[in-house]
Length: 194
View (cartoon, rainbow, N blue to C red):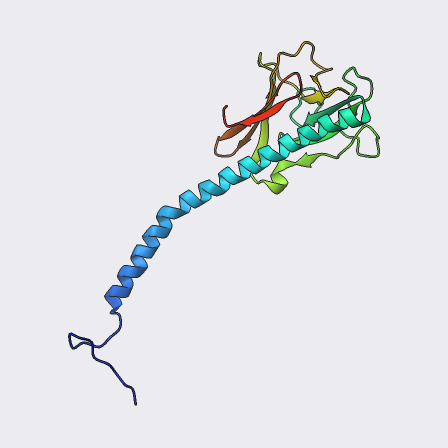
Protein backbone atom coordinates (compact mmCIF):
# COMPACT_ATOMS: atom_id res chain seq x y z
CA UNK A 1 0.00 0.00 0.00
CA UNK A 2 1.43 3.36 -1.06
CA UNK A 3 1.45 6.23 1.34
CA UNK A 4 0.95 9.67 -0.11
CA UNK A 5 1.52 12.79 1.87
CA UNK A 6 -0.47 15.88 1.23
CA UNK A 7 1.28 19.27 1.06
CA UNK A 8 0.04 22.48 2.67
CA UNK A 9 -2.25 23.30 -0.26
CA UNK A 10 -3.77 19.90 -0.42
CA UNK A 11 -1.89 18.62 -3.44
CA UNK A 12 0.36 15.62 -3.68
CA UNK A 13 4.09 16.38 -3.30
CA UNK A 14 6.33 16.03 -6.40
CA UNK A 15 6.98 17.76 -9.67
CA UNK A 16 4.64 18.10 -12.56
CA UNK A 17 5.72 17.27 -16.09
CA UNK A 18 5.62 20.99 -16.91
CA UNK A 19 7.97 21.83 -14.03
CA UNK A 20 10.41 19.13 -15.14
CA UNK A 21 10.24 20.42 -18.71
CA UNK A 22 11.08 23.96 -17.53
CA UNK A 23 14.09 22.69 -15.52
CA UNK A 24 15.39 20.63 -18.46
CA UNK A 25 14.93 23.59 -20.84
CA UNK A 26 16.77 26.01 -18.55
CA UNK A 27 19.59 23.48 -18.09
CA UNK A 28 19.89 23.02 -21.86
CA UNK A 29 20.01 26.79 -22.43
CA UNK A 30 22.74 27.23 -19.79
CA UNK A 31 24.76 24.38 -21.33
CA UNK A 32 24.40 25.87 -24.83
CA UNK A 33 25.54 29.28 -23.62
CA UNK A 34 28.44 27.88 -21.58
CA UNK A 35 29.82 25.42 -24.15
CA UNK A 36 31.48 28.00 -26.47
CA UNK A 37 33.10 29.64 -23.45
CA UNK A 38 34.37 26.26 -22.29
CA UNK A 39 35.71 25.37 -25.75
CA UNK A 40 37.38 28.78 -26.04
CA UNK A 41 39.10 28.15 -22.72
CA UNK A 42 40.41 24.82 -24.01
CA UNK A 43 41.77 26.49 -27.20
CA UNK A 44 43.50 29.16 -25.10
CA UNK A 45 44.99 26.48 -22.84
CA UNK A 46 46.34 24.57 -25.86
CA UNK A 47 47.91 27.68 -27.38
CA UNK A 48 49.50 28.74 -24.07
CA UNK A 49 50.83 25.24 -23.40
CA UNK A 50 52.26 24.90 -26.93
CA UNK A 51 53.94 28.30 -26.57
CA UNK A 52 55.47 27.30 -23.23
CA UNK A 53 56.74 24.07 -24.81
CA UNK A 54 58.41 25.96 -27.67
CA UNK A 55 59.94 28.47 -25.22
CA UNK A 56 61.24 25.62 -23.05
CA UNK A 57 62.82 23.94 -26.08
CA UNK A 58 64.49 27.22 -27.11
CA UNK A 59 65.89 27.56 -23.58
CA UNK A 60 67.10 23.96 -23.85
CA UNK A 61 68.97 24.86 -27.05
CA UNK A 62 70.63 27.76 -25.26
CA UNK A 63 71.60 25.50 -22.36
CA UNK A 64 73.08 22.90 -24.73
CA UNK A 65 75.12 25.58 -26.51
CA UNK A 66 76.60 26.74 -23.21
CA UNK A 67 77.13 23.32 -21.63
CA UNK A 68 78.52 21.54 -24.72
CA UNK A 69 80.12 24.52 -26.42
CA UNK A 70 79.37 25.42 -30.01
CA UNK A 71 76.37 26.64 -31.95
CA UNK A 72 73.05 24.88 -31.37
CA UNK A 73 69.73 25.67 -32.97
CA UNK A 74 65.99 25.29 -32.69
CA UNK A 75 65.24 24.42 -36.33
CA UNK A 76 61.71 25.09 -37.56
CA UNK A 77 59.92 22.84 -40.05
CA UNK A 78 58.67 25.92 -41.92
CA UNK A 79 62.24 27.00 -42.73
CA UNK A 80 62.10 28.32 -46.30
CA UNK A 81 65.55 26.82 -46.94
CA UNK A 82 64.37 23.24 -46.37
CA UNK A 83 64.07 21.65 -49.82
CA UNK A 84 60.81 20.15 -51.02
CA UNK A 85 59.10 18.23 -49.69
CA UNK A 86 59.50 20.45 -46.64
CA UNK A 87 58.46 19.84 -43.08
CA UNK A 88 55.24 20.99 -41.42
CA UNK A 89 54.99 24.41 -39.74
CA UNK A 90 54.05 22.57 -36.56
CA UNK A 91 57.38 20.69 -36.49
CA UNK A 92 60.75 21.54 -34.96
CA UNK A 93 63.91 19.81 -33.84
CA UNK A 94 67.11 20.64 -31.96
CA UNK A 95 70.35 20.51 -33.91
CA UNK A 96 74.03 21.37 -33.63
CA UNK A 97 75.61 23.58 -36.27
CA UNK A 98 78.84 21.61 -36.65
CA UNK A 99 80.52 24.13 -38.96
CA UNK A 100 79.45 27.38 -37.28
CA UNK A 101 78.45 28.58 -40.75
CA UNK A 102 74.86 27.40 -41.17
CA UNK A 103 75.95 23.79 -41.04
CA UNK A 104 72.59 22.32 -40.12
CA UNK A 105 72.21 18.58 -40.78
CA UNK A 106 69.98 17.45 -43.62
CA UNK A 107 66.24 17.61 -42.75
CA UNK A 108 66.04 13.86 -43.43
CA UNK A 109 68.79 12.98 -40.93
CA UNK A 110 67.82 11.36 -37.65
CA UNK A 111 69.50 11.20 -34.27
CA UNK A 112 71.89 8.65 -35.81
CA UNK A 113 73.69 11.83 -36.95
CA UNK A 114 75.40 13.23 -33.80
CA UNK A 115 74.48 16.78 -34.88
CA UNK A 116 70.74 15.95 -34.65
CA UNK A 117 69.91 16.22 -30.95
CA UNK A 118 66.17 15.46 -31.24
CA UNK A 119 64.10 14.09 -34.09
CA UNK A 120 61.33 16.27 -35.52
CA UNK A 121 58.64 16.99 -32.93
CA UNK A 122 55.13 17.89 -34.07
CA UNK A 123 53.29 20.35 -31.81
CA UNK A 124 49.92 19.15 -33.10
CA UNK A 125 50.57 15.73 -31.61
CA UNK A 126 50.15 17.18 -28.11
CA UNK A 127 48.32 20.44 -28.87
CA UNK A 128 45.82 19.92 -31.68
CA UNK A 129 45.52 22.87 -34.05
CA UNK A 130 48.72 24.68 -32.98
CA UNK A 131 51.69 25.54 -35.15
CA UNK A 132 54.67 27.84 -35.38
CA UNK A 133 53.36 30.40 -37.85
CA UNK A 134 56.58 32.41 -38.23
CA UNK A 135 60.14 32.95 -37.05
CA UNK A 136 61.52 36.32 -38.10
CA UNK A 137 63.83 39.13 -37.03
CA UNK A 138 62.68 42.68 -36.29
CA UNK A 139 63.00 43.64 -39.96
CA UNK A 140 60.61 40.81 -40.89
CA UNK A 141 63.31 38.64 -42.47
CA UNK A 142 62.11 35.03 -42.19
CA UNK A 143 64.48 32.75 -40.30
CA UNK A 144 64.76 28.98 -40.19
CA UNK A 145 65.10 28.93 -36.44
CA UNK A 146 66.80 30.31 -33.37
CA UNK A 147 70.50 29.70 -32.67
CA UNK A 148 72.78 30.23 -29.68
CA UNK A 149 76.56 30.13 -29.31
CA UNK A 150 78.71 28.81 -26.45
CA UNK A 151 78.21 32.03 -24.45
CA UNK A 152 74.42 31.68 -24.62
CA UNK A 153 74.14 34.62 -27.00
CA UNK A 154 71.53 34.44 -29.74
CA UNK A 155 73.21 34.28 -33.15
CA UNK A 156 72.25 33.23 -36.62
CA UNK A 157 74.91 31.72 -38.82
CA UNK A 158 72.44 31.36 -41.73
CA UNK A 159 71.27 34.98 -42.01
CA UNK A 160 73.73 37.75 -41.32
CA UNK A 161 73.13 40.28 -40.00
CA UNK A 162 70.04 39.55 -37.90
CA UNK A 163 68.03 42.46 -36.52
CA UNK A 164 67.10 41.61 -32.93
CA UNK A 165 64.82 40.75 -31.28
CA UNK A 166 63.92 37.55 -33.10
CA UNK A 167 60.28 36.52 -32.70
CA UNK A 168 58.77 33.08 -32.79
CA UNK A 169 55.02 33.27 -33.38
CA UNK A 170 52.89 30.33 -32.24
CA UNK A 171 49.29 30.28 -33.46
CA UNK A 172 46.17 28.15 -33.56
CA UNK A 173 43.21 27.50 -35.84
CA UNK A 174 41.19 30.34 -34.29
CA UNK A 175 43.79 32.89 -35.40
CA UNK A 176 45.04 33.60 -31.87
CA UNK A 177 48.81 33.96 -31.48
CA UNK A 178 51.49 34.16 -28.82
CA UNK A 179 54.94 35.56 -29.46
CA UNK A 180 58.24 34.44 -28.00
CA UNK A 181 60.80 37.21 -28.21
CA UNK A 182 64.53 36.39 -28.12
CA UNK A 183 67.01 39.24 -27.64
CA UNK A 184 70.62 39.16 -28.82
CA UNK A 185 71.94 38.64 -25.27
CA UNK A 186 69.85 35.47 -25.10
CA UNK A 187 66.99 36.65 -22.89
CA UNK A 188 63.57 35.30 -23.75
CA UNK A 189 60.02 36.45 -22.98
CA UNK A 190 56.54 35.36 -23.96
CA UNK A 191 53.90 37.94 -24.79
CA UNK A 192 50.37 37.65 -26.22
CA UNK A 193 51.13 40.35 -28.79
CA UNK A 194 51.11 39.56 -32.53
